[in-house]
Length: 207
Image 1 (cartoon, rainbow, N blue to C red):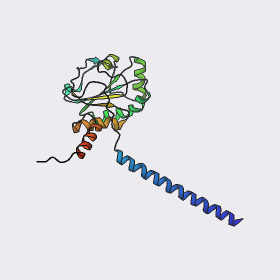
Image 2: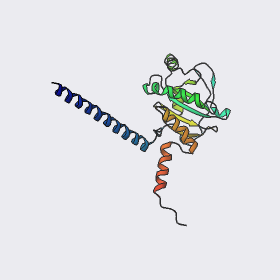
Image 3: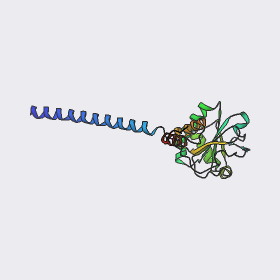
């Protein structure tokens, strides 16, 4: 009986060791995959104003009755995040918007533009995600003027009201990719990576 117990004991430990090695190998493969793919970036779709287009000035009031303008008046860039108070993906992105607003507020204005006109739903969205302090406009008309119909979507506008980056923005990495791409002079990180990949395959110019 004791021999059977010892065999079972060692078999169990061998199984535990095997599972540990399997999990370690899987984690290593996932890490290599993340390194190969890089950080996820905002997928640029043909929505909203074109890159390089000068967008109209905003003259609206936010949920608190304050007049809203683009950050260009203060020499800042503006991140326009188009959301919906009833969009589950927007719920998931709200903490990222709050994080960007807190970390970049000295050089960047963040304006949330809701595609829903329901004031109660929009106030509930603000309260639910602790977005007090962030400019929040409920304006389906502005969304239509900017040709954005599917939230969440973000536009980055420079101090000259020129669109410098845009894309679908589902989480913090997407929003950060727009800011990073604009610093590099590209409309999106995807565009930057494709350009550099193509450049790497071109033969050296012959002088």
